[in-house]
Structures are given as structure tokens and as C-alpha cells.
Amino acid sequence: MDLKMIIKKPLITEKAMSKAQENRYTLIVDQKANKGQIKEAVRRFLKVEPIKVWTIKIKGEERWSSGRRRKIKTANFKKAIVELKKGQKLDFYESLEKSK
Image 1 (tube, rainbow, N blue to C red):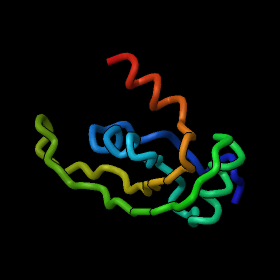
Image 2 (cartoon, rainbow, N blue to C red):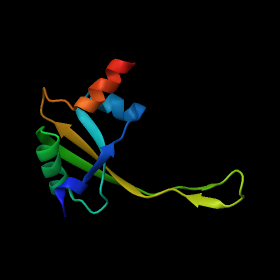
Image 3 (spheres, rainbow, N blue to C red):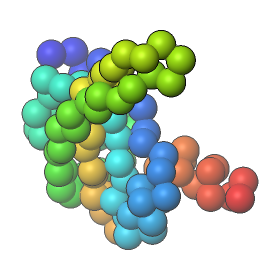
């Protein structure tokens, strides 16, 4: 698998922001990526040293469309929680905290 395609985007939620204070960052990653590949992609492209990686597969939800009276399914995705070495941070989380 190509390492450029592993990290899709950061997951920005209230819970993810509170975990960022504990030096754990949440990212949406490719569904076929394993922990070793995620760790290498974070090391190479985000230029930080990960200590540990947790992965979770999230199943898409089915919900009713309000105007069309039919079910809509959201996409499945995989998220990774990456713990970094002490003193290292990811820039996109810091810029969001400063804007509040």
C-alpha cells in the first residue's frame, strides 16, 4: 500500500480535542491500512514520532432521509488514535485550539 494514501484527514470532535491534550491525536485512515503502516506514515509525512497506535473500524449508519422517505447509509471508515512522544504536537490541532 502506498504510504501517501494512508492518512486521509484529522478527525476534529470535542472528544478528539480533549484527547489531544493527553498527546493522543485522532486521524481518519485508509480501511486497509494496518498499525505498522499507519505508524510509518505518521513518522514520514507528519514528521513526529508515534509511540502507540490504536485502530477502530466504524460502521456506517442508516438513517431516514427527511424529504424522500427512504434510508440513506453513511460510509464506513477507519480511525486511528496515535500517541506521540512527550513534547511533540501536531500543528492542525494547535491552530484550532488558538482560534477558539
